[in-house]
Amino acid sequence: MAVRMISILLLISFSFFISSSHSQQLTTSYYQKTCPRFDQIMQDTTTNKQITSPTTAAAALRLFFHDCLVEGCDASVLISSTHFSKAERDADINLSLPGDGFDVVVRAKTALELACPGVVSCADILAVATRNLVTMMGGPFYTVKLGRRDGLVSRASRVEGNLPRPTMSMNQLISIFSSRGFSIQEMVALTGAHTIGFSHCKEFSSEIYNYSRTSQFDPSFNPRYAQGLRSACADYHKNPSLSVFNDVMTPRNFDNAYYQNLPKGLGVLKSDRALVMDPRTKPYVELYAKDQKVFFDAFGRAMEKLSLYGVKSGRRGEIRRRCDSFN
Image (cartoon, rainbow, N blue to C red; front, side):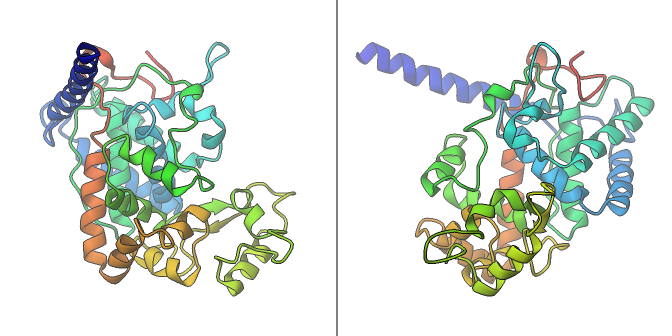
């Protein structure tokens, strides 16, 4: 028994060492010699795409989360399915990922392949595009180290249970993040990404229509807000793409209004409203609602940490020629 326990502990330690050693190989100057125009191309591409399609920032941010929490930050979510294999992007929870997130990566990859063929990974492109777009929306600038390789595995079957769902209990949500080394405070900071973007009506329809015998909507909603959601989502059966902003107050700004909304019952998703009701998460909601700088610092640090999660190097990855298919 003791020998088995030691073996398990050694395996966990080795896994952590492998993950840490891969992230330590990353550096901010990785493309300085091999692709000197990398930063400029990324900045131009993300700026032009965001101006053309203002929903791009939220789309890329969500795509980045969905990539990193499954298999690590290795662009596995970008792979298209084949007749033989159903990829991550076709898992049920990923079907609603907006096209603008994929498109900004494709545009950047196309430009970078012209400038420096076969050098820049899709995983690095997604990480930097997300940071650039968050900053464009008024959010914090944070460091993105470079040198990720693109993953060699993308399976829809590995997605379920590894991504947060609005209907999950707080224990389940905390477990998803803690199993990846993130604290409750870091989880609450990362959830602040909901300050931009939108949610589809079908994701919360059961909470605003025929909720119970005594109430049409979940009583944790602000009543006027619930009525507004009921009106906005009235045709969601006919139009499944109907959606509403996550932050009703300042939907186009990356700020701390998301946290200020929650105590007022202005959170769209059940998991958002739960943050202010659970004693483990409520103090951090109050902290970030009170001080935007504290939120920005926490969000930036948590995003830096997330961007290093499960990165691939050496033979565990490749530099894809196209982001939607393996070489």
